[in-house]
Image 1 (tube, helix red, strand yellow):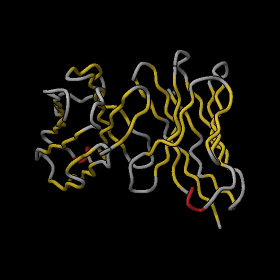
Image 2 (cartoon, chains in turn yellow, purple; image 1 turned 180 degrees about the vertical axis):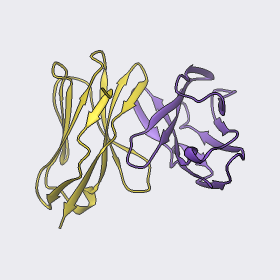
Image 3 (cartoon, chains in turn blue, purple; image 1 turned 90 degrees about the vertical axis):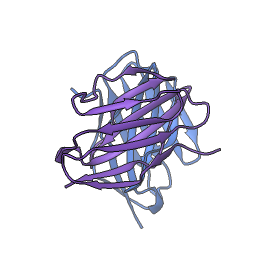
Length: 109
Length: 111
């Protein structure tokens, strides 16, 4: 079992829709959780961090964390073509950062 | 504030040749990471430094890979000799607290 698992996709949504990205992790003692966006040919860019159970909203992005279920998600509201990228889930335990393989999102105009 | 700096951005070498990558983290960031990323995969840790100490190098192929961070600031990752399977993007990242920031990466092609 991989330490951090994501739906590989690709996920395709129409412009203006909600995109939902999911991630599960295996290490119960993980402390902090992150979503990175990676455009093709570019390096990962941090877009959201979440540390406690519940929701965290930042603009069109909402991260959700459920530690009991070892589940993290990212919702993108009003999706735009510029949101088309690969989204990486990352899980941190004492600076030991583990990444999922990423979900490729395409937002169609 | 300057971000994580890496050089070179691209490198093409023939197999069995040596290659080195350089990284300068964000000023004040004590933790530095080297990752390898293959197409369609997430970054995979090669080595993590806390200041000048390598605290996790369990995934570093030590027969051909080496790294150093002598003064706890910039770092060099070396491969000698390179193999065809080493073709990938090599990413450097640094953290202060929990949030990790990546450099632009070095795309290595081994022919």
